[in-house]
Image (spheres, rainbow, N blue to C red):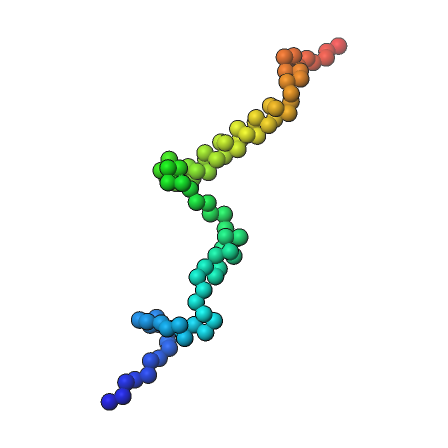
Length: 91
């Protein structure tokens, strides 16, 4: 009795051979494209423990960014006129 031919109806096979992939198997073929179109960042384990969710990370980084911007604005003013109170001219 002959074995029936395997039909290619879109199901996965149990095993694949290299000949099933005529262009070859290349590990990490799309990694550069994925990295370019992604904003995923790898955290060190100790930092990941401190910030269990992406919301926690975003909140902390937002606070750091706001503090850095505030520090830059303070530094730019150079302290000129800081001691004086604003005055208004009245007639």
